[in-house]
Length: 280
Image (cartoon, helix red, strand yellow):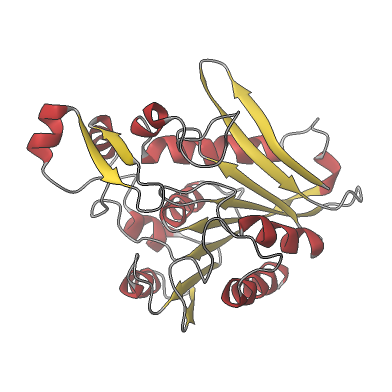
């Protein structure tokens, strides 16, 4: 069963749009929640094909758009709501992950019988990896963690760095989206929110405090998030498993849009790895 663009409404807040991929068997399955990265969305590239692979392996797979990622209920792909994008920040994304996790594990949904609440894996790609690490360090409901090309430090990212004085004075700064050619706005609140929650948003400390299995999957030649960041995560958490991927990139051979009916070979390979880790 594939349920696309489900709407989780919240009073006074933006809704969260999410997809469900599962076989309707009324038997509890491991829950997988996938978090997209910076300038990303749940339907980017080959993520839908990856989701089907998890479904076909009899897992309950959920992927969401963070509420302020720039997508809308009417258009969850790409960035038609740049005002929302400008008001996004790291703590909003952690809160969104909490909301979707709570919704999936709550009783009384149409899929309550399909989920094993004792077997919950969060998968995060790129910036979503950092979000997943922090949430997993805080939330005992999460039992396994897999990160794909994850960042290891929020303070050094494009969204935070740059001329702070000019950013504060103007109230907004812009980052070019190379694919859509949009100038993506970041309001100064992004920096203020980061500074206000800097201790909580320390990925190093979160990684060091993890008590659950963490698989770190990263391409050695990743041009967007350097492989050194994966090695640092492993250094901070020696019990983690570092899986180095050769001859690939930040998105494991995918691109957007992805028209092939098959996943790119490397993404297929790491999906099999992830399935093995979850079912181990």
